[in-house]
Length: 157
Image (cartoon, rainbow, N blue to C red; front, side, top):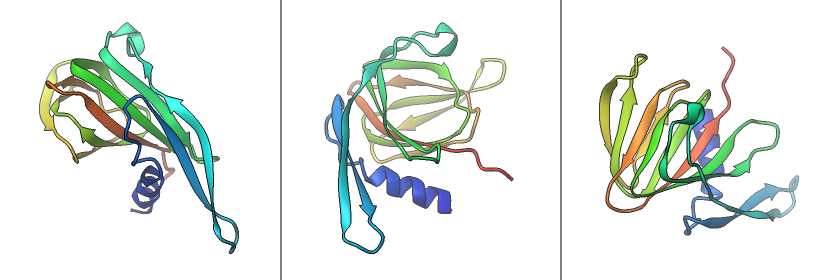
């Protein structure tokens, strides 16, 4: 639970980014008992992702890491998929929390042999938590799909 609290606290720092194309990252630090200090990091811009690993093609997908928490491997990212766009099947090595800002469509969970095993309809304000190595792909609906993602470090047991 502490990991989720940390992740969502970090995500809240950039959740107010309105543009799907660019944004600023404002990091608020507590300077050891003094007044909080806001540090503005460089703006980030989404970059097209034409293909996933193994050359699987995407359609209308842009992505950027907006912030990485120093020394933690926790990353906050922003993604955008154009109307009727697609994100090819892929998996991540870490736990990933995705918050749907706008858009709706189908998230397909994929089995080890490449077969679709479940479809989930996503919509604004949904939160989707992926465990490590969960193979999945996206097919977007008729409006842009924007999301905020939090990539969590793998915890030792």
